[in-house]
Amino acid sequence: MAQPLLEVRELHTYFSTYRGPLRAVDGVSFAVARGETVALVGESGCGKSVTALSIMRLVRRPGRIARGEVLFDGEDLLRKPEADMRRLRGGRMAMVFQDPLSTLNPTFQVGSQIAESLRVHGVAAGARAWQLSAELLEAMGIPAARQRLRNYPHELSGGMRQRVMMAIAVSCEPELLIADEPTTALDVTLQAQIMDQLARIKEQRRLAVLLITHDLGLVSEFAQRAVVMYAGQVVEQARCGDLLAGPLHPYTQGLLRCVPRLDRPGVEIAPIEGMVPDLVALPTGCRFAPRCRQVMDRCRVEMPASRPGGDGRMVRCHLYDGDADTIGGAS
Amino acid sequence: MAQPLIEEQAPETVAATTPGMLRLLLSNRVAVVAGAVVVGFAAVALLAPALAPHDPTDQHPEAIRAAPFWHAAADGRFLLGTDHLGRDLLSRIIYGARVSILLGVVVVLLTLVMGTGLGMLAGYFRGWPDAVLSRIADTLLAFPFLIFALAIMAATGPNLVALVAALAFKGWVDFFRVARGDVLAAREADYVTAARGLGASTPHIIFREILPNIVPPLIVLSTLRMATIIIAEASLSFLGIGVPPSIPAWGTMVADGRGDIAGAWWIATLPGLAILALVLAVNLFGEGLRDALDPHMRN
Image (cartoon, rainbow over all chains, first blue to last red; front, side):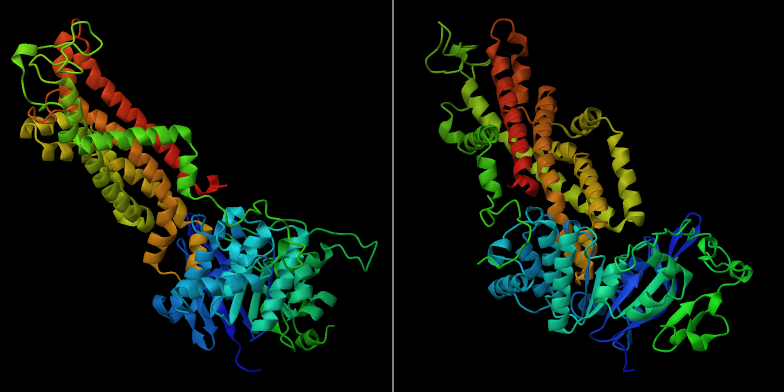
């Protein structure tokens, strides 16, 4: 495989708390190839968003990146000076956040916010930037884009705001777009529209996308590969088809049991019992053990290692100890 | 121009015709009247030499405590009468506006800039600058203003520079606290993270992302502070430790008229009404400004 656009290696991001370090991201590794869409999946609080912020080096006190590497186009972002990072952010890598109302500055017209991004990165300024902003909004499927530029964020609907955020994100032709739950704040019909739009700009601009979500429906539709996180660790990685057809990790299996299936009527929706572990006082052994249906004695004492399989597949579970060969061909 | 989109209709399809801040302000009748009064006072202060019928310090021994125009015994030369030294009240009130407005503006600008600057510093960078500045602010808040001002003015004697210093000494604390608090909140806002994510630098974040969001409360606070400062100056002048006695000031005039309150009540009351009118107008205008500055009100 050619060098991936983004490669995260053994990333550790901790937050200091009065009770000790909270290990929000604890040894996460995965890669995103050029033009590929990778989904980062997991429950709230599993470390998905902190992983994304760590990649952009936007983690703020009391959080800090303890160790690891974030290779972007072969260069370790964690060693770059802040000034270089600033040029990268919004330039070659951009981010779309969950709530577009709070991520747009309420005091400026949306047009000037798009134009500002163009200006900061030296793409265009003045009337030219304004013109480009209108074109970007139009490309995001906003009707009467030119008039919309003069609106303040609170005057736009949720879907339009998210389109504006996407316009800002792609304004400087990034190579990597990190979308942190881009549709969570929107209703279902809008979700589909926004995701279609995202898929369209991804095709047009040959973007690599890291899609952070807890929605397995989105994963199957939009991503080529999925990385499943639990309690700060990657527990399973696979191509989306493989993951959905034959999940290996009991956590992934549990997640899939939570999704209603139209193609298998009669199958009960079963929530995963229990709660996400306390990230300050983590259990020894496997972090999912307290909630796992197939838990074994060794799971409670020994942390399973991540076992690679063929085809970029990976799982972290004692069930597969010793039969690494079978992992790849599971589907 | 509308593309075939089943997109939700934004409630504000009027789009681009967002009324500006000015238009919103002008649609608020109370604010317009209040603003007109403030502008009127400012114009009077500016044009005092042209408007005043007499020199405010000229004494007219032949017309001491002359009655104002509505009185049967009014002296036609003095529209609002004269005080115990025979000085024309109208001219003194006109000149008195100069001191009140000038001191109000200077002190508010001074404290606004100082308080906001320090507040943003403390709120954005936290750590020891915040600890030091906040403790200083707390200490100053524990000072009774009048006693402190009395001490300064008693030490230096009535003069304008000392007066500005006395009024500004703890006035910046209000701006500091508001600015610090709002920056603390704004720096955690998602749009700041988003701006960072788009490559914004720290100065850009402070001045372009955060500052515009904390300006409206500061402007409103400025008007409130302006009213307070005008009253404080009048109080100090009333006590005889504010504006030097040679400069006509409303507070001094109220004090001068105190002795005649039973017989010639207007000598103390008219400058008092001037203080009331200006302070009220400033406050009402500030309120209108607050509404107009809030972008959420602009539709």
